[in-house]
Amino acid sequence: MIEETSAGIVLFRIENSKILFLLLHYPSGHWDFVKGKMEKGETTHETAIRETMEETKIADIIFIEEFEEWISYDFQYKGELVHKKVVFFLAETKTKEIEISHEHLDHIWMDYNKAMKKITFDNAKTILTKAQSLLEKTL
Image (cartoon, rainbow, N blue to C red; front, side, top):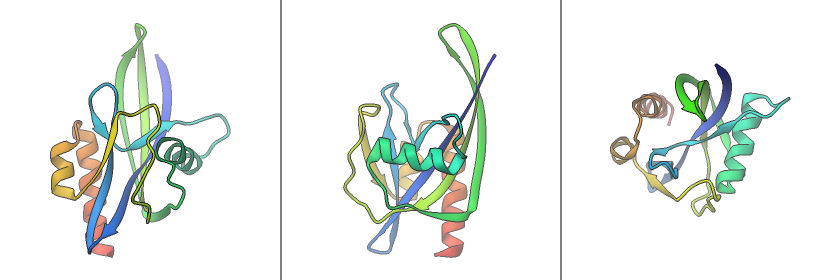
């Protein structure tokens, strides 16, 4: 079994007093957050920052320090089982216009309720719910 670790960010911005979350449309069809594989020597925060820059060109990221959520899942890649662990951080940006990479088909900023309907996987919905709950307490 292959072991992989990735890091990502639940990115949000405030517009007209509303919290909007960024979702990316992946080529496999699902909608999810920014994330990617850790490179040798990187911390999880460094991976999350690099992946955000590569996938969206967003550079202004302010981490919400109380948020760090891990998920894990298994999938098949070229006939081999992969066990993937992903850590998600929560971060605010002031950037509205983004430039998605070749790795994605589209993007959208959505409020919590709309994002919950758009997100494909249950583990991502759980992460979003935890992020929303924390933001409601702190903002």
